[in-house]
Image (cartoon, rainbow, N blue to C red):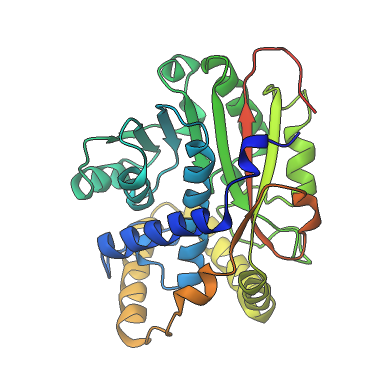
Length: 322
């Protein structure tokens, strides 16, 4: 069932939020700081297309939550280095508050030191350890580019705890990369457990045995240019690189003694890459002008969708609206 209030959101309003989030990230970003051995934080990613993808997810969340037109207390799960959370908090209404969380103590300590803001707090919480009692003071939960890191069993358990903890009227905003335009179901990226197409996410979220939230809406972020470039990158070696890195990661997990030396090697490699490989000119306007938040008939956009955005609502009615 489509959420009617989103039908009137102009593309330009969404794009303005995207531009502002991008500008905030650019202003706050710290170059040459390796923060996450799984691939680094958004603030240092050299692939600006990927950075724009993440900024678009936060712009979509800001647009969707902003349609509520009321004060919101928001919990974020999986905030990483916190830079996108900080950008989001700087743009959100003054009567909102955001608690951004991540399982990594290292990243949370970094975020606290880098992004002090009155309407934003950081806390170390694992999604798998989040208890319903922690949710009683929140109106909304968002976890953007996180669900793909969970097994199906972990996602089901998390949805159950979120539903139990949120009051009627509470909502959850999810984003995840859309595999619909790709030939393969899976990109090969090691940290991901499951990757979704529009149809698989829709079927999963509308299964009453897996998701107790009564209302489910799935939107899409689209850009033919971003999709074409992402598909081309995967075909030209991205999948092979992902599988190779995943194999190395499994070896590190099997032999813990390798972890420290692997982190040093990753840090050194990133710094050399950043120092000697010139940045390709990135013409932001050409990308932003094409990105759309699709809220009506999202099922028609399999070929140009790069991200799925799902909104779950607890109505307390005990059944799913269709």
